[in-house]
View 1 (cartoon, helix red, strand yellow):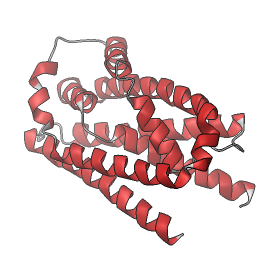
View 2 (cartoon, helix red, strand yellow; view 1 turned 90 degrees about the vertical axis):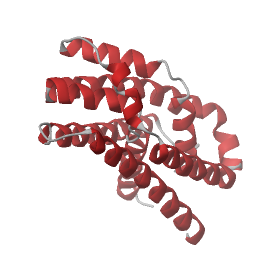
View 3 (cartoon, helix red, strand yellow; view 1 turned 120 degrees about the horizontal axis):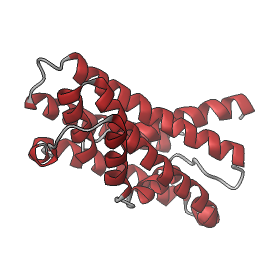
View 4 (cartoon, helix red, strand yellow; view 1 turned 120 degrees about the vertical axis):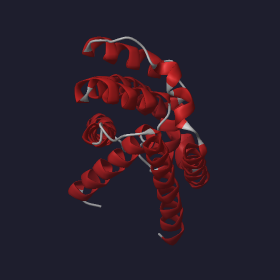
Length: 213
């Protein structure tokens, strides 16, 4: 594979990983939607950036701790890729089946500025270190870290993951803000189920491609 093709592959995989990590409409997604509905696009974006900053931290931890287990990953790549695909599928299934509205009332609070939105979102997200294991599973599944991965590749990969996350949050906030006057609780179900379905489709396509390649 040429350097150009390898870079394009890394960019695309990074974008996919960023979307997978960010897409489920969990507590942070609900908080982002709620603040967008109540305060507008700016509050939604600042909340999303807080979550993205936390994901960036855990992506860095996962990427540079992967070097410790890279030999193990290379030796067990088949099993890890299957396991990673299964994790993504059931993560999507869980997201599809989860009721996001039940947590909305618990998250309503007073008015905050953008910095407070960012900090509160970051602190809420950073308290879930299990995200590291999700990153590691996805890195193994997509062969994102190998013994040939350079520091430049790692930095590029992490930036692409953040681009994927930012893309998802921008779309989510934009859609919610656009339909702000008409948005209702049913919209949360639609977004949540759509995100879960997307994750399951990605998992199924990945496993088919894996066995056919």
